[in-house]
Length: 333
Image (cartoon, rainbow, N blue to C red; front, side):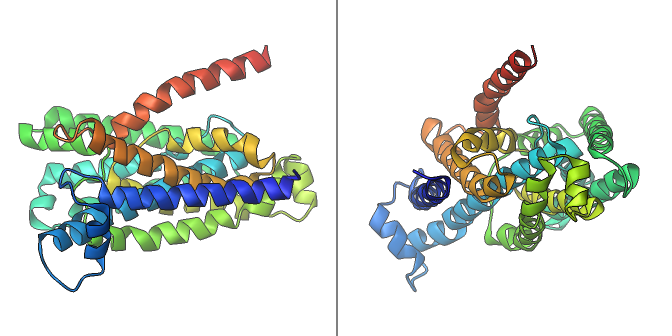
C-alpha cells in the first residue's frame, strides 16, 4: 500500500466516522427519540416538541461538536508543525485563557443578564486582544520561542485575572456559573452560537490550511525553508491569527476544552506520514470525531448529572500527555 493511497484511505475512514458520530449526536439524548423519527423531524414542517428538540437543541450541539473539534484538531497540528514542538497545543499562545477571561468578565459584570450573547462576544473580544498582544510581544521577526514565551505570559496573566474574579465575586451563583462555564460544554447552545462562531472559525481554517507547504518546508529547518521562498513572517502571522480566530471562536461558544489539539495529531501522525500538510486535514477530521464521541459519552455516562465535556477530555488527555512526556524523555536519553 503506497503512502498516497493510505493517506486517502485514512481521510475517508475519518470522514465516515465523523458522519456517523454526527448522526449519533443528533439522536442520542435523554428525550429518547427514535433515530428515524429524530432525523425526519429535522426536515418536517411541523413545530411540535420533537421538531423543537431536534432543531433548537440537538442540531446546534452536533454542529458545534463538529466545528469545535475540527478547530482544535487542526490548530493543534498547525502549531505543532510551526513551533516544531510535539507538546504544542492551541492554548499555548494564550487564546483559550484570554477567551475564558472575557467570558468570566461578562458573567462577573452581569452583562449576560442584559445581552443574551454577551458571553461569547466578550470571549471573542478577549481572544482578539490576546493575539494582538502576543503578536506585538513576539514582533514580526520573533522566532517560535518568542511566541511561546509571549503566549505563556498572556495565558498566565489571563489565568490570574480569572482567579481574581472568582476570588472577589460577591455572588456565589455567579462564581458557580463561571466555574461551570470554564469546564467546557456544548449543552444549551443554540443556532445563534453556531452563526456567531462560524465566520471566525472558517477564517481561521482557511489561514491554517494555507500553511501546508510552509510547514513541509519547515521540517528541513528555518534557513532551508527561507531559501525555498517561504516568507517566515507570513507563516507566523497565519499560524498565530489563524489559531486565534478559530480557537477563540471555539472557546467563546464551548468554554475551555483541552487536550484535543494535543492528542489527535499524535495519534494520526503515524498513519498519514511525516508531512505536516497531510496531517492538517486528518487532524481536523480526527478532532471532530474525538469531540463528537466525547459529547455523546457525557450524555450516556451521566445523563442526569451534566458531566462537563472538558472534564471528560481532560480525564482522557492527561494520562496521554504524561505518556507523551515520558516517551519524549526516553528518546532524548
